[in-house]
Image (cartoon, rainbow, N blue to C red; front, side, top):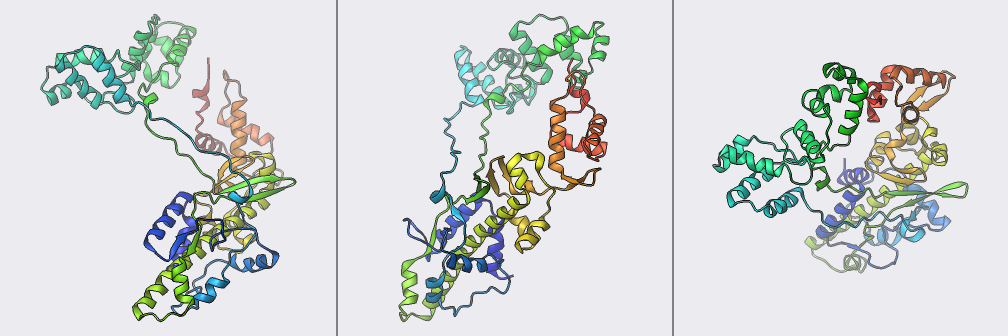
Length: 463
C-alpha cells in the first residue's frame, strides 16, 4: 500500500479525539500545513455548495484506492486552484448549535486527605501518627487495609499492639467501615457505629456471608433456628450498608463522549450534521503555495523539500475530507435501513450487517467496519456508537426476523415488569418470547440477560 493509502485508512479508524491529536501533531511537524483562523473557505471545510459542485463531489465519495498516487511532478498550482471540498455535509457551527456536553467540576478531596485530616485532629502521639500514616498508605481504593498488622509493625519498627490500637481508633473514622480488613469487618463496624441492635445481624455477617450472597435465606434461618421473616428483616438492614466505604472518594473521572455526528428530526425526514467543533480547518501555507505558483527558481533540495511537504499536507487535507464524507455516507445509509428505529425506538431496530451498508454506498465491508468503530451519533433516541446499529438476526416463528438488540430490549422489559416475589426464570422468559413469535433458546436468553448485567431469578427474588 502507498503511504497515502495507509494514511487514509488510518484516519478512517481514528476516534474524534485521536483525529484532533493527529492533526495537531501534523501541524507541528509540517510547516506547509496551517490552520484557518478566519471564516474564509479552506480545503478542509465541509459546507453545502452549489449543484454543480455537488456533482463533482459524487466522484470524491469513492474510496481511496492503491492507484491514487501523487507523483513528484504533480502540477501543484493547478491542484490547489481546482481542489474544492464538495457535498451536502453540514457543519455543526454553521447549521445548528450542538447540545452542551461540557462538565465543570471542582477538585475533590481524596480518601487519603480525608483520613489524614482526621488523624491530625485526634490528638495522637507522634508515633501513633506515623502508624496511622502507614495504615492510610496501605488502603486500597475501596478503603480496605491490604496488609496485616504484623507487616505494618515490621515496616515501621513498631509494637504490634500499638498498631492494633491505632487501627481500632481509625476504624471509627469517617466514612463508616473504613480501615477494615475484609467485608465482614467493614459491615460489623458499620452496624456498631449505627447502634443497631438485632440478634441475627452480626451472626449473618460473621458466619453466613456466602449464604447471604446467594440469597439462601432458608439455610440461614435453619442454622440460626429462627423464621425466614426475621432473617429477611435483618437482611434488609444489611442491604443499606456500604460494602466499599472508600467508594465515595473515588478520584476516577467520568469519560464524556463527544458525538461525531448529530441526527435531527427535520419534518418527516432526518438531517445529518457533522460535528467539526474542535477540529482545526486546514489549508496549505500561503508562502509555500506562492513559491510553487510564481514559478520561482529554487534549488534541487528546496524543490524536493517543497514537493514532500506540499504532498503530505494535501494528502492529509484530502484524507480528512474523505473521512468526513465517508462517515456521512455511512450514517445516511444507516438511517435509510433503520428509519423505524430513529422514529420509534430500540424495539424497532432491524437486523443489519456491514455488507448491507457496504453494498448500499459502494464500499468494502472493511471500510465500513473502520468507519463505525469509535464513532458516535447523537440521535432522537439517544447517543449510540455506529457499531450498535449492526445486529444479528433472530428468526421469528411467523417467518419475519428481528434484531438481537430488540430481543434484549424485550427481555429487559419483561424482567422490569416481573413480580419481585416471583421473578421470571430464563425458561419462563423463553416461553413468553415464543408467544410473541420470537424463537430463541433458553441458553441464549441467559446469555442476553448476562450481557444486560441482570442477575438470575434466584438472586432477583425479594422476600
